[in-house]
Image (cartoon, rainbow, N blue to C red; front, side, top):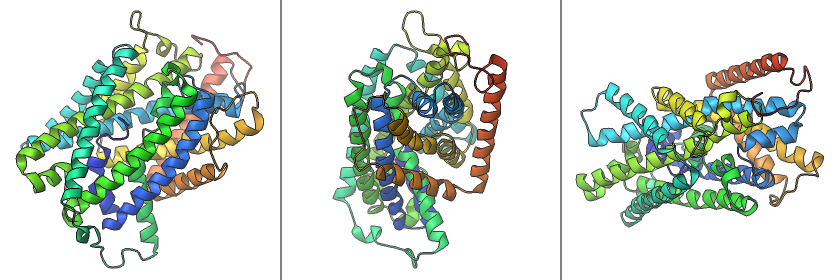
Length: 433
């Protein structure tokens, strides 16, 4: 929930409204919730069955054959993680800097970028510690996150004007290509905001009772956050007319200022800054464990397998992804969001949906404590939802994602030939390989 309720909904409401040019864009939140819940069932089944640190790295390897195609698939997951983790963290840092501008109106573009970079450095320092300290810090962050969202939602409910929400422009629901592409774009933005329900899978090896905790964490988080998001966003539009909301770069602060004045707006801005910091904290925590798990198995570069000598956490991985995130925070927000979603869909999400079926049919030796209800319907809905979002993202992003995929395949085969791995040999993976 820390990762899901980050700066996302506070910076993307104007973007989402602009995708369909009106409050009908709320449909994107609804469609996104459905896709997230169905995809969450995929993660829950795989995570409960294989609760090792690294998450999809293990799922893809086991599903596609740990000694054959699974080696390529798991390598591609690590490849895309190194690319998308900085995009995810960087987008949160950029959002932090945008809200900081509300407190300091005279901020220059350079100062805004420097603040985003500083956020990435700060969370890297915060995560340079053992997992128990991280857990205690996460609880404190979570309490502030929930309090912020509840305050904004309650304020919206008390001052809600349904006429603003129902102020649809002419032809808002006309079934044209523009409508469906706009809805796809709005759903993409919504999925960016829902993203994070899978975070627990990345450090599942450090979770007690994973067969219960992982499915509960994923599904309860999705349902709780979906309810909060829909309520919060509808009530915000019910206070700030959507034509004004589209122009805002700090919509929650503008919303509170409209109701309670500038002092209250400053307070909520500070809380949102805390929420953002908590969110990127959670993202780096999860993603930093993936290169470590792969390196420990001998399938990634050896330095990433190193643990801190006294605090027992993958410090090389934390420092590496934290540094790349600081560089990514120099990009624009729309580039970060679109690139983040497209990379995951092309390289991981679709392949992972097939992984559930492959494990059910070909790996009876893998116990599945959680089984998605109504199988295979959730898998089908999740796949079609991701495909729709991918198409709506636009050709430039799709091509860029395909180039990254092709480079990853080439990198794998170059490495496989060098070390004698599949399909050039039958080398067994091991630490330091």
